[in-house]
Structure formats: C-alpha cells, structure tokens
Image 1 (tube, rainbow, N blue to C red):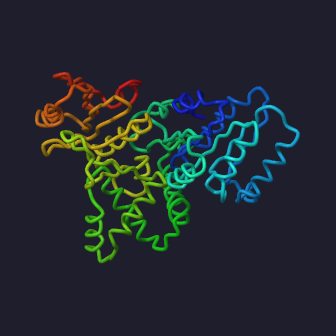
Image 2 (cartoon, rainbow, N blue to C red):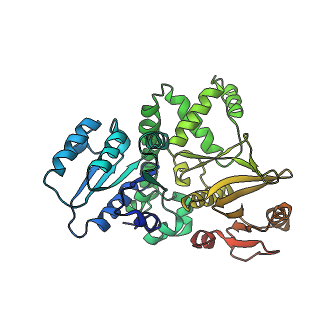
Image 3 (cartoon, helix red, strand yellow):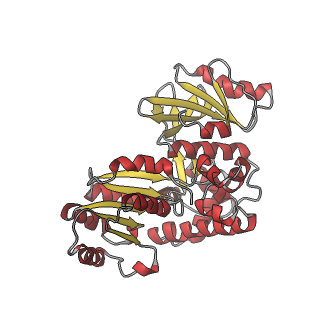
Length: 390
C-alpha cells in the first residue's frame, strides 16, 4: 500500500480538533485508503472508533440520516473519551450534513468524511457546516507517489496514477479492463444517476469529445457545432450542464484563460483536463499520440494537488501553458515534449520575455540536457515533478 504522505502531512495538524475533516476527490483516487491511514495513526493506542463505508453492502441499511443517527447513538452509549468517526462516501446518506454537524456538537468526537461529488459536498457544507470544516482534495497518485512501487516514468506516462493499478502489476490488458470499469462507474454512478441524466449516449459522446480534445481550447458553442456536424442536435445549455456534472464528479478540471496584462480571467475558451491521463487509455486509439498534451495534463494535476490555483496565460496573442498561484506565489510554466529545434526553444522560452514581472518561470520537457537561459529555468519533467518546492 502506498502511503499518501503528501495528504497526511496536510491533515495531521487538524487531528483531535472539532473541525470536520472533509476529504474529497475522484472515485477510486485513494480516499478510502487515506482514511484507513488516518485511522491507523489515530487509533493505534486502542481508542474507540466508528468506520463506515456507505458504498459497502454491509451498510445499505444506513442510507438516511435517521438510521445513521440511531446507529451512532447506540455506539456512543457507555463510551468515554474521544471517539473517532470515519464516514466514507458520505454523500450516499440522505440528510448526512445535519447528522454530521449534530455529532460534532453533541459528542466528544473527531470526525473525518470522504465524498466524490464536489457540488454536493460544497453546497451542503456551506449550508450546514460553514466555518466548521476543513477541505482536502485528493488526486490519483503523483509521479513521486507512483515511484514508491518501483515503476518508471514511462509506465506512469502510459497508465496514469490510479492507485489500484499497482496491484495489477501494470499488465496492459488488466489495466485496460480496470480503467474502463472506473470510467463506466463514474458515468453511471456519479454523473448519470446523481443528476438523473436520461440521454446517456449523449453524455458519453460529450465525454469522448472532451477527452479527444484534452488540453485544447474550446467552447460549448463549438461542441454544439460538432454535434450538429454529426447530425446530433443538442443545446448549449445541455452541454454546459453536462460539463458541469463532469466537473462535479472530478472527472474534468476546467482551466480558465488569464489576461496577464489586464490581470483578469477571461470568460471564453476554457481548456479541460482529465483528472488522470490514464483514463484516456480505454477511449483513445493511440493514447500517447498527443504526448505534449499528456505532459501538460500531468503538470496541471500535479500543480492542483499541491494546492495551486491554475489558469492559462494570454499576453499579446501568445499563450503560456499555465500560471500557478498560491498565496503570494506566482509561477509561469511552459510544457513541451522535446526542445528538438531552435524554433521550438525560441517559442517556449521567448514568450516569457513579454511578461512584465520577475516571478519564477519554467520550461518543462522530456529533454535530459539543461536548456536554462536568461533566468528561465529548464527542467526535465521527472525532475520537475519530484522537486518539492518549485
């Protein structure tokens, strides 16, 4: 089992506080394992705890807050000291938010919950537990975590970072089957069922379109035109709703454009990136064909997992792949497959000369030679991903 130390390090300062610890993220990205690792750290001295996974058939009788309240009340009888409560995929319990807040107020307890739907979690938390929780977003394995199982960057590039793949020894056929199952589970459970979508075929086609255009700029209007070209009528409103549902399930991350000179986010031409590039494997004929965009995806998800806000930079008609922001820190990043010609080098480095500030600037590629120049840092992508502080 791979230890999710990067997340444990963030969560530990909140152990044994009355804030509710909320762990959210894509289905099967490792939230349950992280919850187990937190439990192992907290109850090693024999402390009492409740641990419930609401996707397990063993807990199907606890699908509403009334039944859960009864279960917890029975457990809490004749107990003393702090009781640790771990609730996995809490969004499956109807009315969960009122119950969780009630436990926080009523009992001597330390609460940890996980969920796979950002809209459901954020809206209910904001309504009922505002100011009383801390949120931690969990992603599939980063390259640094992936390496713990002794695998290479080439394997990471091909299969992605879904944690369970390490148990399959990265066999192509078994990985393909598993990733296809994850994809179908997300569509059917987290998107179709939760949002009561009737046209599953349209949703599948839309997801395939976004994956085929992963990391490319497009709009709902351009998607509407695409569907019209294949004799499929769909409204812009429906497209926007479906994209929003996909983002709520953490399948896609929409990244906005940022006008660097005006210092404002633009409302058009978002780019969408998939939560794990390995999920393209069952859906794309040649997954490594657009290797430059895959590298972009890897860098983007790594940045999000480190807590950066990310946008695409625009200046004088030129584009910078990513602007990373966190507190007062700003980093500009260009991602390229190989700096194979002087034209490519000038394009990737030259755009930074237009930026009127002195924040850190990176060009990231698969080259092993160092092309750093004019204060712009060039990093091999493996080195970049393993650098603790950018």
